[in-house]
Image (cartoon, rainbow, N blue to C red; front, side, top):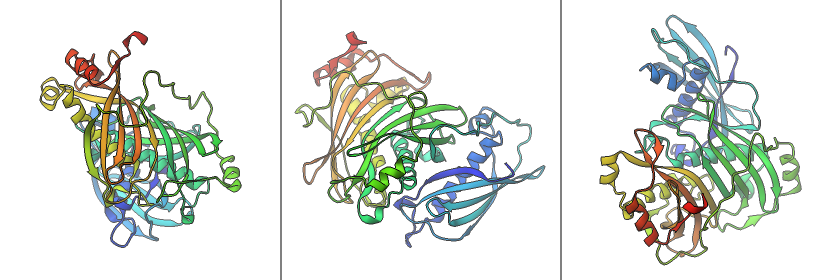
Length: 427
């Protein structure tokens, strides 16, 4: 690691920018923290290894020198090298680069004290892996919820940054007005990740379709060497004001053909969804489980609500919905029960803009022995139009054993009263 290696990759969000429209110091410092965590993992000081020993590395010096600004929507990456590894401590050198242009945005150093008596843990394999690297970062403590793992909305945030990196590699340019955004997305959650964990996303092309590009991505927990989530995405060019689609140009298609292609071995197709599906219209027995409005820090570079905002509504709604089922906060706290998502199937119908009030209407679809399925219609409360529909498969979760539990009878009875079908015979 005496030579530079890639330690962080992502996109600048509007909320990351200061009053001058450039990447602000707090956000840049956080991304350099991601880079340092990634570098430390490569050196054998992974966060899980350190936690097992009740230790952590303490940063004692940081320097940043700005070169050229990064702005909202820009994609970037960080390269890091080990400048010093002595008895006094570890010194890392970073350079922050604009991915599109290769222009140097900043240089920085991070100095950390040595750990006494803590041996090195396993380091992730750095050899080439299938697909293209589209995200490298870490889980921050602020991204973890009451279940003590990373909340679903931040899987979406990291997936969106990965999609922006793919768009840059494919030559998409938002200056023409149309933006490259997901139209349909399936996410399978396979493993919990926790504060400090270093994550990486790899993306490959399944096919080029009439309305966009069919992509697949895996989000990997680097220290564990295991897939935490799989994304299957159809993305296209849509007008951020109206949601109207634009066809891909021949030049775009030719550029996409040069990018890594997905194989079934490395990027298996998600399993088909069985059982009842979400209807087009909101059913009469649906419950309103969330009311919010889109704020300035919840939009992307095209000033439309991010997927993280929309799935944040779903996350907020879950606790209200479970309360209707008798799994209220008091019961959950007494029994140390939480919930965990297994599968999201998302269709984006219309963009949501700053200030738009939204309502989430939720109803049950199906009950299995442990998993249960329910659906959401995210409605623009001003126009009444459906902006997004989401089907969710989830489980109630023992927070001590970190395992799914069989659904309580009272929960099942109330779910049946709300239209849930019993799917246990088909399992």
